[in-house]
Amino acid sequence: MKKIYCFLLLTFGLYAQNTNWSIEVNYPILVDQNLVGANFDGLFEVGTKYVFWENVSFKTGVSLHTGLFQDKERIKDLATDFDVLVWTLQPRVFGELFLPSLPKFHPIVGVGYSAVTFFTNGNNFTFFPEGTETRYGINAIAGFSLEVSPKWYFHAHYDFIQLSKSGNFNNPYLQNINLVKVGVGYRL
Image (cartoon, rainbow, N blue to C red):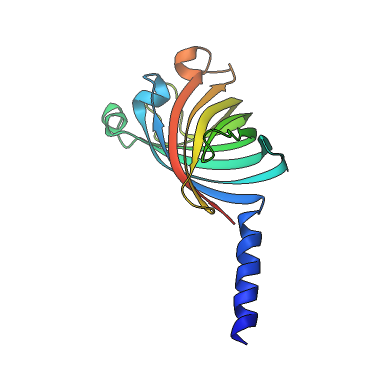
């Protein structure tokens, strides 16, 4: 009976190493001094990736990530009882390289579309009227992943979002979002 359990454990363990799904947890860091970068802090981001094509030197797939940002204390000082949360939803297509000389290091690039929703409580701030406002825009990433074990990996990437021009969001100070994201991933 122990041999059967060992065989099943080994079989499922080997299969899990070749799975196409992974989950990620990231910490987003805003790196610009525009409206979003100067006024918000990243709380967390979670996501999932699915690889639909792979060969010896390249793999490509799709991912879906969602993150949450909260206003810094100084926004609360600008207006009485004012609070803003920013929620992002980012579907994207990505590619990852396998380098023979660096087998555990994998450069990553990706492109997608982002939805950025501002949830506001308070109405004394010019750019965010009270309520909910969603802006959409293109998204591009460049970064790397570093395998720690067959299932675990560390990753970091630069993430650029350019929101559409409309309403109060009609200049680069209001529409460009620059992030660095660091996190860990687990292959299912």
